[in-house]
Image (cartoon, rainbow, N blue to C red; front, side):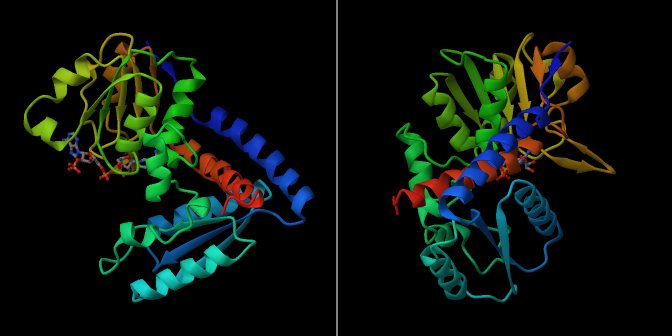
Length: 288
Ligand code: NAP
């Protein structure tokens, strides 16, 4: 039977440190660190995410400002707002609420955020720094997974790590973070599945990290005995939220496994706030 890897205790520790850092920042500079969210339209999931961020920010002594723009806002208008926030000295972090309407290209817009205010760690400069093992601001979910692995003191050196899912904000940065720790890292994606090779890779994973968004994609019987399983997927099925890994069977085989909900999820907002303190400090030492 596996040991459950709950995210909340790790998130609570991170939040404690962030709250102290926010207080120290305020003592030193006379203002609270400020996170600005730019949101287009009223997407329900995005609104919930912003509400959760605002609540956590306030609990930790961080100011949180939301810019609610209409769905018709043009590329130039969003970029103008970002440039204005880049220049505002008291703005320490900028977060772009996704999904953006179809007429806007998120990757182009992100390039306008000052990398020292990019709390989500998705500006090409911050992503590129991970390639160089010079990690500055790391995408929150990938960082959350690394925190979970660190919480069990696992030595990643030479371990067989298999990631399923190669998205730009989760799978790919996670692969680089694992490589930076010398894990032998395999990244599986849609082509791996189409070639029927998913099972083969998963079966030899000592550390399995799944970020796809397909309920029960990974069968429990594929899990190597004693593996560490981090399920990043979030899928609403009926009135339940489940992950990408068939939990009951995986639980019998793994040594450690994250529950969904309650595993990776609770950590992401805490890490976002920690990133904000990082970017706030970067600006206060005049990096940019
Ligand atoms: P995404 O951008 O949709 O990426 C999904 C990835 O899975 C893609 O790389 C896709 O490959 C790959 N894929 C699709 N079908 C596959 C299959 N049958 N076998 C192997 N790979 C397959 O999603 P994401 O943003 O990375 O998020 C993934 C999941 O994590 C979602 O459920 C999301 O809700 C969840 N998530 C959770 C948190 C959290 O805080 N816990 C945070 C972020 C995301 P192609 O692109 O080549 O098709």
